[in-house]
Length: 103
Picture 1: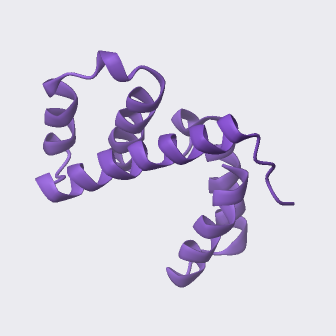
Picture 2: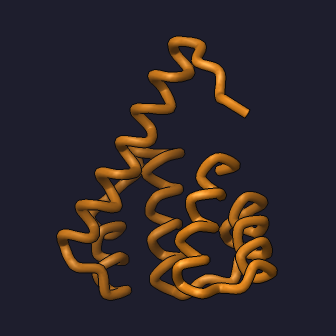
């Protein structure tokens, strides 16, 4: 999350979110997204992403339905799933090859 926090801050800057609010949100997300002030759709998305990342064999159709109930369309759900899977793949490749993160 540390490296991705900078990207999130750039997005929040474009959306005209103040620096104090940016720092509070990024800090909360780094610590535990479940404690961050998020919209219900954002929380549902992160719940889905967390489950897919940590316990992928436990995913069921109801997980996708939960995203639909929060207003996510099939394309968005596909993208959420694909991006989550891609990051898992890239992180495992980097870990498996002993790649060190840049400072």
